[in-house]
Image 1 (tube, rainbow, N blue to C red):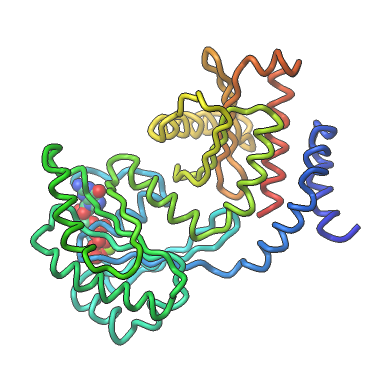
Image 2 (cartoon, rainbow, N blue to C red):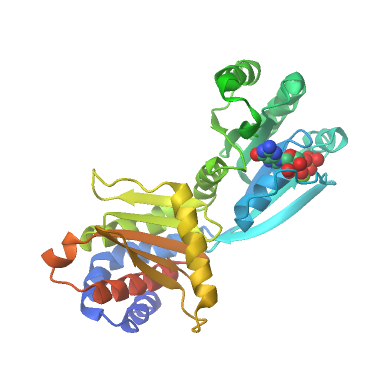
Length: 343
Ligand SMILES: Nc1nc2c(ncn2[C@@H]2O[C@H](COP(=O)(O)OP(=O)(O)OP(=O)(O)O)[C@@H](O)[C@H]2O)c(=O)[nH]1
Ligand SMILES: [Mg+2]
């Protein structure tokens, strides 16, 4: 038995429901070993660049999605001087976010003299444009084009996103017009395929957009997602979702066509309730919660590495499978150990 076999085996031995878990283990061991090794090989730091004109909202975006707190409506604007590096870890992948100050002197320096340092080794670039600054669009276009050219030169495999930000400030009847004005100005002759998102820190749109970015900056689609799929299939779960603990959605799998999807806003309410529940619990080590609606049982588990696993099961499956809720609950907790062992 080599090290990886032992490693995986020990992770499973500790768990209470071992025969089911061994079954999962046997089904997955080859994949798991392969994925774990490929994970080790890929573990270099992933770099995300966020840039855009001054006050477009970059620092607020990073703060919101890493801390999970919506800012005050009239938050004071504190310009970023030079740039700030924010280090986060998602599913074991270290990510460094370079938040570049948007004042002209900084932007000129980053896109010119410092461009090889700034634009090298990037996995994702995010360009933020303030939806209310229509009159600045030619300056936006100038820096967007230079940035994309530098990205193509120094990080040709990187992907690029355009966030049309602060959409909460656009009156409803002008939304379509503002979007077409911005896209007409900015995207006409853009060489790279840009992924376009309308965002605001005052609703869940920024979490959804940054979820896409984080998934691209990690390799969880190859590592964790197949395990989640296998688990929900074998345990007839209706849905499985994985979030960062700040509530950024990373993976969502639905196993039934008629699952009435839970919105991210609802999930975030659940998170708050769970965090509150954990804070009030006497057992400080507990990190999971089970709750029921009329037809469903939901289990939320905060993992040690800062992920949140959220699973939904139809109540009929307990009768069909002759399984009790506590038994399923311990299976989920054991499964989260398996996920942790992959990280
Ligand atoms: N209405 C609204 N305001 C926002 C949003 N995001 C950020 N802001 C506000 O925009 C202002 C500027 O935000 P920052 O995040 O500091 O802007 P920045 O792009 O980092 O600015 P520099 O560091 O100077 O480049 C602040 O007052 C924020 O509260 C949003 O989605 N909606
Ligand atoms: Mg800033």
